[in-house]
Amino acid sequence: MRTTTGWQSLDPTTNALTRVTIERRDLRPDDIAVRIDYCGVCHSDLHRIHGMLGEKNLVPGHEATGVVVATGEAVTGFAVGERVAIGTIIDSCGECAMCLAGQENYCYDRPTTTYGGTDRIDGTPTQGAYSREYVLREKFAFHLPDGLDPAAAAPLLCAGVSVWEPMRSAGVGPGSRVAIAGLGGLGHIAVKLAAALGAEVTVLSRSTAKETDARSLGARSLLVTTDDAQVAAARGRFDLILDTISADHELTPLISMLGLDGTLCVLGNPLLAGPKLWELGAGRKKLTSSGTGGLRQTVEMLEFCAEHGITADVETLPSSEVETALNRLAAGDVRYRFVLDLSDLDK
Image (tube, one colour):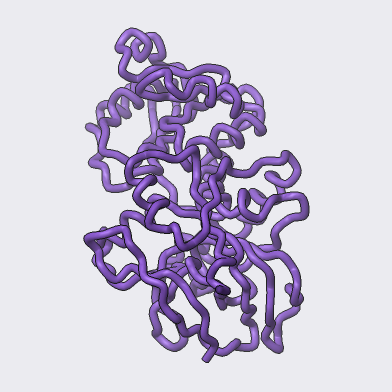
């Protein structure tokens, strides 16, 4: 077995993580070992260490960048020393209709998640990228394009592809009218991507506090959702609304802002209850959701970001300050994504 060091949640009542030694498997023929340099702190990490899915003793982390340090004997796509990125899934059945369609994230036999999952061969629990080394199949690793800063690119592997896939599915491009509800970890990347695709972008927010940020990211305007007059005036205005809000909230005001055949894609809080069907019927509106992205879409997203110079706006902290990052994330005190520098685990 290989050993490495990481940060594990041993008490679901606190955001304090414990430094532990982690066992990684010896490399299988198609495995690579990656030295993790940076890992983004996702809101789902916060939810899951507190037991949202009933899990315990998690090593979180599913948006990471690093460098290949070893390869299995059958590996052909990566070499030692190459930059690499790791996302939210690290295996799938490879045989179902979803996998064959390039949507491994929707594998009918459940994709193996980067942490909190179960290895498909030996049945061991997967431990995430809040650690100095990770081992995975080369098929599920991504080349990190030249020109992308590894710290700022890490959140693209979850937040980035999570907003990219529904935008591509909706055909967002020049002339599209796109609204982003919530300007946080997902939302700020969504604004950048939608604007780069040529869409007219509006940020939906409860106040004007982030209006300057919204415009600097590429939005043309900010609509204050607590202003009933502004909401009423926006009736039928948008083709696509990406809802990145993690707190509980009503979907009805967002649906009212969709035009004919418009789509509301709920990403930030998939546990929300749905609306009455008549709300969708008035305009053939569509309600959907999405779960990260498949391998093909992730490669496409990384290449697009490299071409357009898009990364997350990040605050990088030593991994020893993970509790601080989680506490501040819970309080909404981040613009717009925390990233952990794992190099301090060498000490």
